[in-house]
Length: 382
Image (cartoon, rainbow, N blue to C red; front, side, top):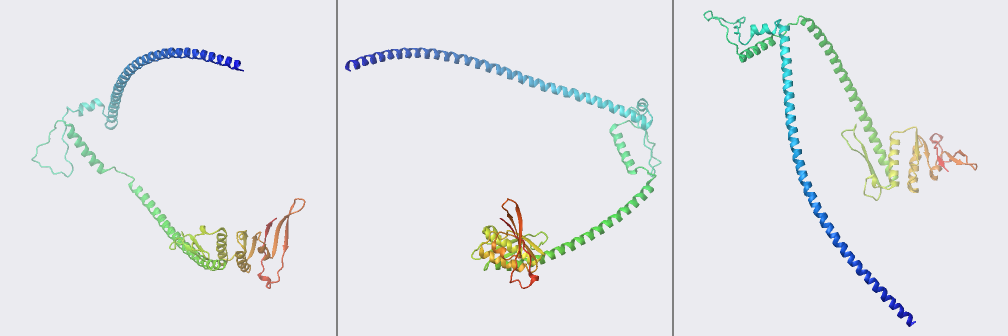
């Protein structure tokens, strides 16, 4: 065993010596490669700096060339606009000259040459004759022609045009047009008067309808509010509730808010009530509507689903009162509600999977008056 351990130790030292030689060779090679890499990086950095300098110089030259191009382009646009403007001005001048020539021929029957020969700037302007009604002094000398001055003649022309415009044009059909306009005015006046009368009648009808609507709404609101207070007090003994108008002074646009305070609670907002309290408050409002404005029959769908036994009993007492004047059709799953019914209608499934409607009429010994009986339809899904 000792000989084996000694041979292993010799092999281990020999292997470590070889690995050390290899490591030294790797270090020398790495240093040589690092030096070569450093020289390559320095050479690449130098070449990069030269390329960057060359690029910056070329970019500066490109910017100068582009700036020169923009300046030349701007000058070209200015020259082009100037040439175009001059061409347009010359064309307008030619059109104006042609229009003046045509106007002289059409209006005065004189061509441009004759007009210039007789009324050109070098020809003396003859004096204007005296206007009718002007006072003329016989001792004054006769007016003589005077040289042409453009500003004076333009002022003279403007004054003459104003005087002509004041005179206006003679319309030989003025009497006929006046008669037609007068008849048209009379017709439109009658139509306007009819419209005003119709508008007044319509506004009167609207006021009557608004007054009637306000009266009916006010009566319905008062009756419903009174019944709501009474019904709520019965459904919530010790509680308070009321109906409030949002716009008391404008019944046509007013809304109705409900405040309810169950016994033992201080808040009045419906959103703060429990589900059963909200359902019972809604039922109280419906019953108040039923009592204030009775209907031949009512259909109620699961109105007592969220009520407990105590509240259910109070509601059934009120429903029994409604049966005196109206017929109640109630959809329910409550057993106590079914017990007060005169007839039951339910849907059942037979053994073969086919559903069928089952009806059962119930007689109650406590119904002494047959006229006060009402049929209540109960749909009980089973």
